[in-house]
Amino acid sequence: MKKTADETAVQPRISVLIPARNEEKNIKACLDSVIKQTFAPYEIVVLNDHSTDQTASFVESFNTSEPPVRLVEGEDLPDGWVGKSFACQQLADHAQGDWFVFLDADARLENDALEKLIPLLHEQKSGIVSGFPRQIVRSWMEKLVVTMMQFVIICHLPIRYVQKAKSPKFAAAHGAFIVVERSSYLKVGGHAAIRTSLLDDMQLMKQFKSFGYPATLAKIDSIVYMRMYANARQVWLGYQKNLFAGINRSGFLFSSIFYYYSFLYLLPWFILLFGGNMFYVISAYGLGALTKIIIDLSNRVFTLASFLLPISVVLMLSIATDSLLRSYQKRGYEWKGRRYL
Image (tube, rainbow, N blue to C red; front, side, top):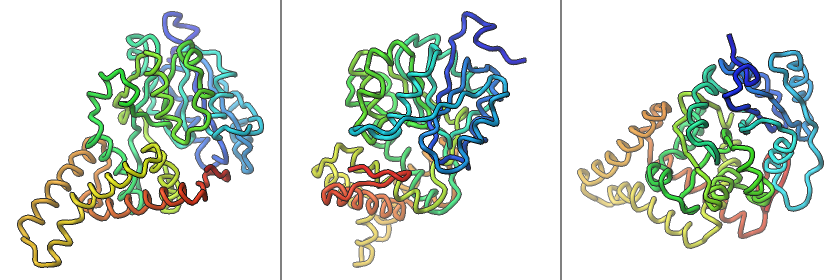
């Protein structure tokens, strides 16, 4: 039998908050996963962000579920706001729980996800918790590019140091699953404090750290999973929007990363073309590929594409270059029918 927050007073009241914009393909499965929790949330609130598909009607079909799902119609996007941050802020304004779980519509919770989360919330008491959901990758573009997210973070931002460091400079988060304690969230200014950022997840984590609140990057791949992008175009546009913004739109950092990855993972193959030592090339490739394979195995996204690290690097650098050019040329980024500079 499910335990609700009302029945177990010592447990936190958890509000699951889902921003949804044209998510008719995802929202039913997402809500099913929330409703089936072994520890029922206090409330489930979905914000319909001006969807032009059947998102709202699908959500309304859950209004007799237990717990019931509440649908909120989103307001018009004000100037100076990024769409998702405004949606999340509206959700927080409607929420009544002690902890807010911001969950993307394309994310799914395992049945015991909230139950396993509660001990961490009891221990932490305030602040923010996030983590990287297990990625479901099907197309070759997803297998080659989406899996690079964890590879890059683990290679360049040691997770243990992120956990211990109080400086906002050392922060990582994933916007598909972010958990915040209500009073802490209000004191740091909520999503309103990061309203202009395309990287709302990273900026929110930094915001909590800058106020001195606990900020945990938890390993959640056993309780949360998602298919972030459904095809090659979505992969390209999604990372195009985030990559250059992710390095603070710094041309110097972009150049450093571009040459670093080219030297480490691509140069050996060019050397081979001009008569280079085969042992050196195979050794260089082997070390990089082995690292990628170990990381993919630990995150349960291992496929044959894990062996194709050089191709993944070429694609990642190509998307990053496109991201940089769009920023410098003021062409902006398009995502879910909206354009951001």
